Length: 225
Image 1 (cartoon, rainbow, N blue to C red):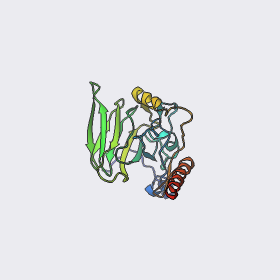
Image 2: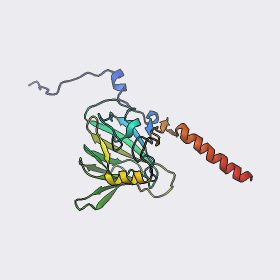
Image 3: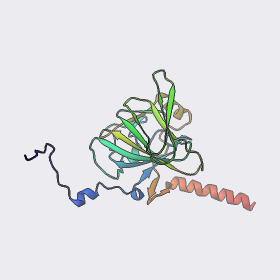
Image 4: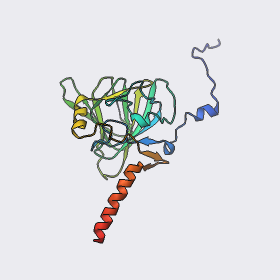
């Protein structure tokens, strides 16, 4: 008996398939575009690998999970019900408490990552993820993650995240927004530009490069004096 297939076949050319291949060394990353991007302790680089199209509405607190810049530079530009990205961060770094309107699943890739959430009593609980461990947050759960890897403080670790939807939204909690306002990190004077990684290297924006050079010159001057 001939088997009757129920799912339609769709031939795909190699040219089309290659548009769905993402080489990590060529993926552009962003360290900006989110409310907490420049909050001390929250610094991280986000890579939009698959999907993550910008939400239909964006404001100071409701944004794309990968930020304004990364949402516009997906390596694989599709909208097929899910999105995939990477986070690179140094030990002790991770986002502030926030929420999502769809499922968010974390998979540890390198290092040790702490996934925290608010329970029904309003207390924060957590689990630590080793490489290939998984935690899946339902929509509405207040959560954050942090690199808690022990060892060198200048060594990045990687966390993978998969988020449902075609244009998912993230919203930082009222408490997080109040902390950001107190720190003076809300407003038009905060840079929206992102860091971009080129062939695996992380390159700072012009503003950050110039300030870094200024610090270097000051240190050099002190040594001379």
